[in-house]
Structure formats: C-alpha cells, structure tokens
Image (cartoon, rainbow, N blue to C red):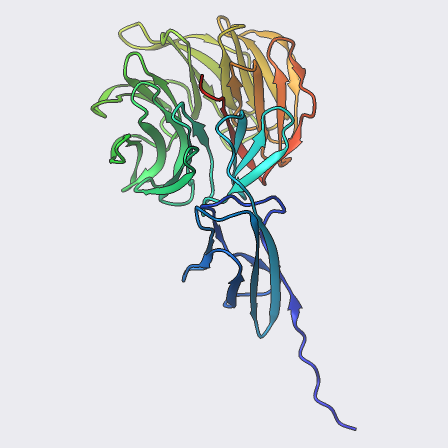
Length: 396
C-alpha cells in the first residue's frame, strides 16, 4: 500500500556546560546540528529574550531549567542546573573562559562552584577587595560586574572590544584596554560611581599595569610598539614611549620603577622575529630598556613574584613557563612544562601560587612559586578556552 514518507528530524545540541549556572547568568542560545531560525522556549526559572539569550534571575533558587529549540528540520534540548553564588567567606578562583563565561573554582581543591555566563566572550577577569568580579567582553561592548555580597550582576555598556582589565586599589576604578573605539585603540575607565570615560592610547592596546601610588596606568599598544602612561585621575596621557615590537603584556615592580614588557613575536610567525621579555627603567627622563631576556620562542603573558624576584613568562608555542631572574632577566630555573597554549599567568601572593590558564587544553595549571613544583590536583579542568585567572581571598 502507498504511504507518505516520514520527514527526517535532525537531533541538535544546545551549547551549555554540565556545571551549574549562577543567578544573573546570560546564556546566548546556540544550537549545533541544524540551522536557524528556530523557535525556542524555556521551562523553569528565567526568560528567553527576543534576541535569543536565556537570562537567569538574580534571585533564582537552586534548581533546573529546560531549554528547547526546534524547527521543521530539527529539535534540541538542554537541562541546565542553577546553582548558588560563591560565598564571600571562602577563597575562590574566577577563570575567564572565552567559551563559557566566568568559571568559579574552590581555591583549595579546584572543584567547580558554578559558572556565570556573561552573554559575551571574556578575555580577562579581575577581583578587588570590595568583592567585585569584573570580566571583559573581547567581542562585545559591555563588561560584566558581579558583586559577592549581596550577589548582584550588572552589565556596564560603552566598554567595546575589551582585552585586559585591572582595578585601581586606591580608587576602585576599573581600567580596560580596548582594541578599537571609534577607529582607534583606547583605555576605558569605569569609576566607582559607574561613569565611563575613554582616552585614545595607541594602536591595538592589550596589556596594562597600574601604579596606584603614583596614579599611573601603563598601556601596551601592541601594533605600534609603544607604552602609554596615563594619569588614572584625569585620563591625561602623561607620556608615550617606545618599548618593544608587538608589546603585548606588562608587569610592574612593587616600587613602580621598573616595567616588564613582553614582545609577542616568534621567528616562525608572520613577523619573523624572536620574542623576548624586557625590563624598562621608568625613572629616567625617557624610559629605556635596561635588561632583556634571551630569545624566546613565542612569549605571551607575564607575572611577577616580588617575594622571590622572579618573572614568569608563558610561551604559547612550547607550552612552557620561563622562569627568569627579575633583575637580569636571565633564566634562573629550567622552564616549567605546562598544558597547551598557556596564556595570561597570575601570581597570587597569599597562597604563593602561580596560576596558568591553558587555552588549548581547557585547563588551569598551578605551581608553588617557592618550590616551582606543580600543586596537587593541577592542572584542573575549567571552561572552554580559558585566558585569565583572578583570585578572591576573604577580607579580614
């Protein structure tokens, strides 16, 4: 007997983590397996915005939510867990995951506490003594600001294409480097009252470092090889000076007199020149390079441990961390082997640990900076393509 053929319905997958999402999360709906447009709905707490973002209420209780998306070609569903915010009384790590958002880990055993989906693509994170967690959006126009007590999540607009973020401990102003604002690279300041200001600094700003005592923020302008020194109060450019080609990451000595800069180059890259770490003396009328490392394969990030006078530099090509004497920039130990594509390292003084986010391994490595040995349970899994780590310690 004749019969009508059954249409083939594709099985799709909604992109989401298995870890619990935190209240205040904004999760863009992405479906793999069939093409948009599709109709979507949510069963449980939260709403789907008209532009396809699942938003969890800031006062949501622990539980689950079911996301369903489909059209005539396919059907997909995801059961999401909703967790509880991290406690201000416990130390934790905040990992900027390009794919997932901000992933919170317990600082002792590195277990995942939850994920704050920011609605964007974080490239950096910072934490301050007020209990604020800041995340950039390297492809968007807003930064995410979460506060621990009480737990609140805000999105601050006017912060386009943010790369690095740092918080001035003197004023609690947030500083973000912007690859492009109105056709030029810039530095953005978000003051404690929420006001947003910008100043052009050079071509493609990336790294930054703050001298809170002198009210200066240094900005690495990658594509013109300069560093801009900016007054943190007036946002006036104090001076701009030559550093190294492809200056990418910065670290500042504790006394504010020496700036460390990373030349993000490789002989095997399109720039066909070796990378290096340099030390720049800031007390001279014109800042100048006073020490340089040996040739480095493809350096990217830097962290300074003033307690041991050690400069740590990650190498994205070799999967290693160079261990350099901060005075001479000569190797003081064999490179530390770590996971794939190590990015922006973070030195945590209270725990004497070096955290290394590995973008190519979806993991974070951790080393004791006194012994240079890997800590227990490291490296540990985190969100996809992690680029930075920040650490919260309870305030006394």
